[in-house]
Image (cartoon, rainbow, N blue to C red; front, side):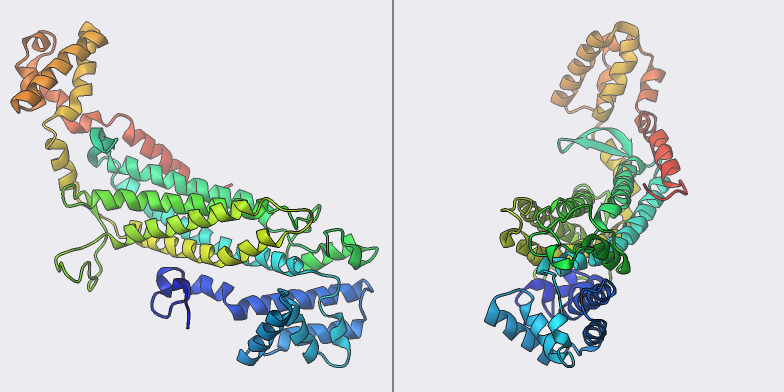
Length: 457
């Protein structure tokens, strides 16, 4: 029975998606490893490194072997007997090859040649999934930003209401983050599409005098580029991948955290789209919890933690260090699955978000107009100077707070301020819609950029 939540028969789909699970499960992973071995044998035969007949037998065996429970039990037993990562697999394939063709299985290659090459291949597929999800999320955010370009709400700093903004402005900030992640993903692709065939210490000494040509041909058959030099101990590209996932996940966490807070009943400005049948609490039947927003934070924490572990893999001893690259095996699938789930949840969240414009307006008005103190100060500053204006508005604000009055009432009662601003001018200053600065213009700029037909990067 599974012991990790990611494989739990009950909970697994909260920690990954079936689409990505299908890439990392034992069967598809092993099938991919065997295809790499098949292509390696075929390429080595072309370069005269192994007999052509043996190469054909090895390739056929690798591609047709049944990956059933008996096979995996055999591989497991071989691993546990030798404590070598792939010798159990090599022996199981060798036993199934006809004649002595099995002598040429995995010729001249090492564990990392196969696993690093597979990693490059599988991460290409993960990258496609991430790119697709980000594209849909960006589209949803773009739609929200356009719809709410002029929807006035409270802007908050340090957890407190500051000045009016628009909800479209808030969402457009998110949308541009997502666009930058899409650009990073596209820019990063060439560095990730590099395979490995290095031999024991990275010198390709076991692959003959045309080793570099062989390496290039082998990797080209798999759709990968050859490295300029072996990267057995250079794990910066993989660390970059994890850090990119951490950036993406943190944007999802940020959006989820904001919605989590704005959904609080005392704020109530947005809420997750409710799914009939969802239960928030088994003891408090009334509750409608921000389940998606909350789980985005959980997944993002896991992803960031795993990223820190992978950064440790940048430090290697000499030309190979199992302490470093074996740690990658533990967290690669877990992190990719978590990102996949996070993006599905984020797409669902922003695609079904409910906006409560009446509460946005009510929360602004509940400030008693104090949120517009800057606007009053600036209007007064044009007549008497900024420092003097700040002092007068500050004194009026503090007096209003003490008396329990609104700011507009205090301003209208202040003879010093009224000596410079007419009643009509003061009334106009307390129209929240007039004080969102350049929010609308910036939303328009973002939407124009997001409509650009060119792909990111």
